[in-house]
Amino acid sequence: MPNATYTFPHNFLWGTATASHQVEGNNLYSDWWHWEQQPGKIKEGHTSGLACDWWGGRYLEDFDRMVAGSQNAHRLSVEWARIEPTPAFWDEDALDQYRQMLLALKARNIQPMVTLCHYCHPQWFLEMGGWQNPQSVAQFERYARKVVNTLGDLCDCWLTLNEPNAYVFQAYMDGNFPPGKKDMNAAFEVGTNLFRAHVSAYHAIHNLQPGAQVGWALYVLLLDPANPASWFDQQVTDQQHRLFNDAWPSGYVTGEYQTLLKAIPVPQAKGALDWVGLNYYQRQLVRFNPLQPTHLFGERFSHPQDEKSETNFISIHPQGLLRVIKWGAQLGLPMYITENGVEDSTDRIRPRFLAQHLRALWLACMQNYDVRGYFHWTLVDNFEWERGWTQRFGLYALDTATQTRTARPSAHMYAKICRENALSSAVVAEYAPEVLAQLFP
Ligand code: FCB
Image 1 (cartoon, helix red, strand yellow):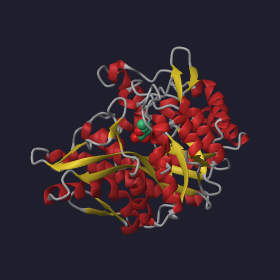
Image 2 (cartoon, rainbow, N blue to C red):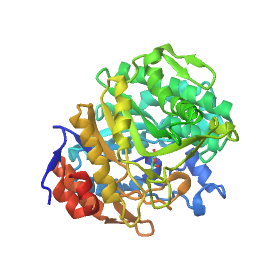
Image 3 (cartoon, rainbow, N blue to C red):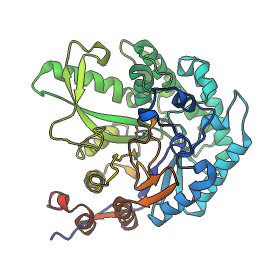
C-alpha cells in the first residue's frame, strides 16, 4: 500500500462554483426564465422553478455545508435580471439580498469570487438585441459599476463573463441557449461585443476599486487532431483552437479580437486582465470533414479511450488539465480552475474524477505554474440549462420536490482534501481505490 500525500501550496483556495440562475429559483425577469417556458427548449420539459431555492434563503444551509466541507472560497454569481429588472431601474432589495449573502460568506470565512454575468441576462436586454446591440457594451458596464459600487466593500475578486466562448457557440451557432440563433455572422459580432464588454467593465471596476482583481472564465475545450499524421486534421484542429480557445487570451496581449476573417482592434484590451479562469471539463478529437462548413470543416468527437460521463456529456481526460494550465500560463498571470466536475447521479465516476484531476492540478503546482485555487462544479445538483435536471453535478444530491440535500460520498472525499490541503493515498484508497496504483505509482 503506498503511503504518500500530494500537498498543495499554502493558502490554496478550495471551493465550489455556482451560478445564480442555476441555484436561486424564480428568476422571473431573465431571458432564461422566458426561454424555459417555451415548449421544446429544455430536455424533458424541465424548468428551473425554485432551483435550489437560494433566493428563498436556502443559501444559508448550503454555505454551512461549505464550512462543514472545509471550503475556504466560493464562486457565485449575481443576477443582472434581478438587479436591473427594467433598464436603469435598480432593485435595491435584490442588491441587499446579495449583500446578505456576501456577509454570510464572510461570517463563515469563505472568500467570494463574484461572477457578474453567467450565461443569463435580463429579458429586456435580449429584446433590445442582446449582445448584437452595440449599446450592450455600455449597458454591461453600467451594471458592473452598480454592482461594484454597492458590493465592493465585501468583494474584490470579480469575474466579468462566464465562458463567453461557449455562450456564443450555444446561443448563436447551436441555438440551444436564448436567443436560439444559428448564424455565424451574429456569433462573431456577439463575440466581439462580449470581448469589448469585458474590457470596458475591467477598466470601470479598476476605476472604482483600484485593488480589484478582475478576470474572466473560459470554457477550455482541449482539442487534438483525430489523426496526428494528417495535415488536414491538424489544420482544422488549429483553426478551432485558435477561434474557440485562443481568441480571448491572445486579445489581451495583442489588443485585437480575432474573428474568422479579421482581427478587430480593441486597443484597451491590452493588459485588461488580472487573472485567468479556466473551466475544464473535457477533450475532443477533430477530424477534417468538408461537409461541415459551420464547424469550420472540423468534426468533433470523443477519443475512444476517454471515459464518458453518465449522460455522455463529457469525454473525461484528466491529464488534459495539466496541458490546459500550461496553455493558460502563456499570459503570465495567476490562474484559477474556476470550474471542473462531472454529472454523475450515482457517484460512480466522481470520486476518481476528482482524484485524477486533482493529481494533474497538483503536478502543475509542483511545476511552479501559478494556480491559486480550485472550484468544483458544483455543491448541490442544480438546473443545468438546456439539459434541465437530467444532469446531476452536485457533491450533494438534491430532491427538488422537498429541497432535501443528501451528501454523496464525493462530498466527504472533497471535504478531506480541502481540510488537508492535499490529496493523500489514504483518501484515494478509501474513495477511489481503482485509481490508487495509477495515481500513487
Ligand atoms: C459550464 C457552465 C456551468 C455548468 C457546467 C456543467 O460550462 O459554466 O454553468 O452548466 O458547464
